[in-house]
Amino acid sequence: TTSTTSTTSTTSTPITKIHSIDNIPCRELDIHIQSLDDEIITILEATSEGQETLVDAALTEEDDDDEALLDVGVDKNIVREDPYGAVLWPAASAVSEYIARDTFWNDHCEQQQQKHQQSSSSSSSSLLGRRPSLLELGTGTGLVALSASVSRKYSSILATDYETVPLRLLDEAFYLNRERRNNINNDDDNDVNNNGDDGQDGDDESSNNMTPITTSLFDICDLSTPLPPGDVICAADILYEPKTGIALAQRTMEALERGSRVVIGCSPGRPGRPAFLEELKRLKSDISGAEFVDMEGTTCTGKRHSLICGEGSTSVSNEP
Image 1 (cartoon, one colour):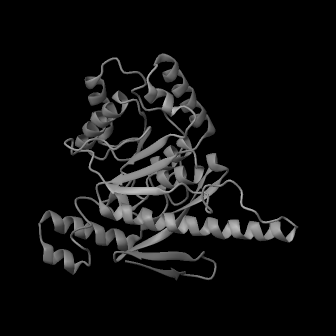
Image 2 (cartoon, helix red, strand yellow):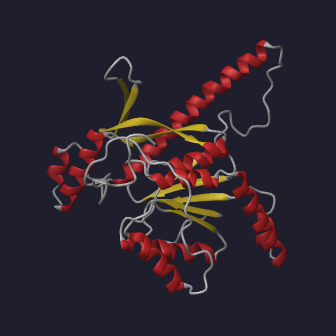
Image 3 (tube, rainbow, N blue to C red):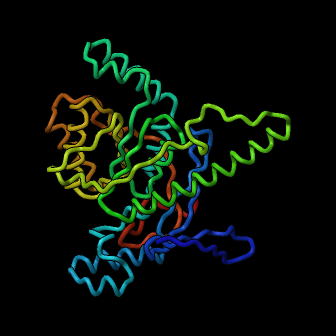
């Protein structure tokens, strides 16, 4: 269930739109993506109250107390182990910028051309001349998937997470972005028609100029489940634990072996980062490019629960 309200503390403070997603208060947050001509992407992330609710639910779930989960107002089926995916993290912006770049798209096309020249198989030739599909692992607030959707550089987008809450945030955020872009397009159409245009539609595949996003539950640590399909596989700031780093390295090899391109974004200091690199090199000692490259990024703003983001974290600041 979803509902929307607007709040403001003073006359000089911009109005913050608050949505209730399964009884979890979430705020709208606008992110500028420079590689999309500074396009604004609206995401939803849990407010301080919402984070408190999710943390309480996660702690209660550890005790396996269904009645206590009802007391904090959260369905036991939507929280599993952590509330991290309900807030934005810096690497999501960096990965969004990267996969939406024209240079990334051109490089991908060149790689496919090289693969085609090296292989006479029909599968390689079928990749030529078409946009790649994208799979995101651990989508969280969905900024990467939404940026890919707005870029329209991808034929299909599958955003996955092992928690239900992030997927519901993304579904609602997709609707918000689609509606805003529809309104902008309608205003532009009215301006054009007022200037004498015949009003005929162009060749856009949808009125809102966004590629649809499919969402699905998927746990990268459950290696009994195959990796979903995708020409480009990406993940941003999901290396919170060593076990996740090991699992992501195994998924990375799974993707590379089938010919996918993999993009991993990780903020410095994540506990799973060393484990990811070590496992990746253990699985394939001669793998090239198995190092993180520093990129300019943007810190996140807004309050974070102490159990979600510890004191002194470089991920959050008062100003981006």
